[in-house]
Structures are given as C-alpha cells and as structure tokens.
Image (cartoon, rainbow, N blue to C red):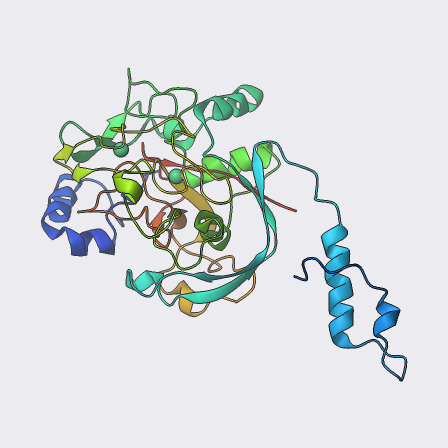
Length: 341
Ligand SMILES: [Ca+2]
Ligand SMILES: [Ca+2]
C-alpha cells in the first residue's frame, strides 16, 4: 500500500498568505502526494393557576413547566476528564475568513461530553498496552515530520507516536499524542467508549460560550499582550521566537482553558474530527447536528498547531479548518474524544 502524505498546513489559506513559502514546501515535498481544519427569582407555580377560562393550559405555561422540569433534572453522571457541553444553537463558520469557512450559519446541537484536553501520550500508551494496537505509522514504518531545523516537511523512517520526530526522538507522557491517523484515533475512541467529535461539536466547544469571536478566548490574538495558546510566534518557518514558551508540543493544560474548561482548543496539535471534509459543506449542511458529507477522501481536523504562525497558518482561529487523508500521521496532529449524553 502506498501511503498518501498530506500536509494539513498547506491549504488554500496558506497559499494565499505565503505563496513563496508554500511553493518551496511543495517543491521539497514533491515525492509525496500532497493534497494538502429566566425566569430567575420566580417561584414555582402550579400550572393549574395558569389555566384559561376553558380549562386549557396556555402554550407559554406548558413551555414554562417543561423548562422548570428540565432545570430540575439531575445532571447526567460525570464522565472522568470530560466536560459536559450544553446543547444550544450557535453560529458556525465565519464570513471574514477563507471561502471554505463560509457561510457563517446557524447550527443546533444536542448536549455532549468533550475531553477537557487532547489525548496524551500516557493515555494512548494505556490503550496500546491493553490492546496491542499498532498505529498506521508503525505499520507503514514511516511518517510525516516537520523538521524544525530546516523548516521543511520530511518523510521520516521510524517516526511514530513513541518517537514523533523519528528514531531517537522523544515525547513526554503529558504531551498530546501525535503521529496517530484518523483511523488510529477512531480505534482509541472506540476502546475508550467514546467517539471523535463532529466538526460542529468541535467548533461549538472551542468557542467556549462566546459568540462570533475570532479565537476561543476572544478577538485579540495576544490578550494583555501575551500569547495564550501554543502557536508559532515569529516568521514561519525561518524563526520561532518562542514567545509562548514552546518551540513544539506543549504538555496539555499549559495554558488556561476556554469558557467551557477545555484546554488547547487553539494550537498545540491539530485535532481529528469525525466528519469527511468538503470545502462547500457549510452551504448545504443540515441545521441540526450536522455530521459532514457522506463520503470523501479526507477527514476534518481542527484547531491548528504549534506550527501555525501569523504569516503562514492562522488556523488557531476558531473557524479555521484543516483536512487530511484518514491514514495520515504527522508530528503536529492529535485528537480528543467526545461522547453522547
Ligand atoms: Ca509555540
Ligand atoms: Ca489543539
């Protein structure tokens, strides 16, 4: 089997922003097949008190009663390491970004659980120890690595989740696991009794309760003058100033969580989503609980990574989208899991 090598940081946005760098990257990677995301204070009332003269209960009263009943329902059982994201309606996408982020459109979601942080190396190791699972990178014998020293993507023998940059490289237990393909991530999720989030769930969760903001924390890239996520400060790929303290992967929870208590929804590593990817999906997606196109060649990934820079890839933006073939593993791509309520 010939594995396709997909560079998720070489999408249209990057080409538009940095055509010369992208052309260089494309030349270098030429041996790979590139295709390159109140009622507050009201006392409880007897519904009968609201009956009309004919004995019927006004619709508004029924709705009030239903709302009160729901409010009194106990929360579903807590799920370790996960956050309950309350179902609601939100505006997905952006009209001021890339064409494939448009149109901004209303999406309604059921409640769901979301992992508070990216799946770590230690968590993935427990899965492997329990199942003997071999990732696709291990079976192929190689994987894609961005070589920071030379600023280029490379085919690296021996690169896998234990050694994300190739033989002899290391990763820490609390770092997000990388070099896992969509297929690998799905197998982990199944073992854990979870699933990958849909793209809509991922974006809604990433917004953290904010509406129409550029980032998962607001509209300023550097609130109070400082980076609040792990992305690339400086000029990609020549110079990384490490203003955020990290050249490559950071241990999960190195930065403050968003409004829902979710960490690293922006940057650190890209995160696989369940959906097949399609550029124009937002113009045809259903309003309720969208799950992506029915088939495709690539799966969605979201959130950007430590390689995303202002001059090259701004996919740490909450509406940013990435995509790669389901067997692709890279040293800046990981995942987190979701679960129904
Ligand atoms: Ca960084
Ligand atoms: Ca992330």
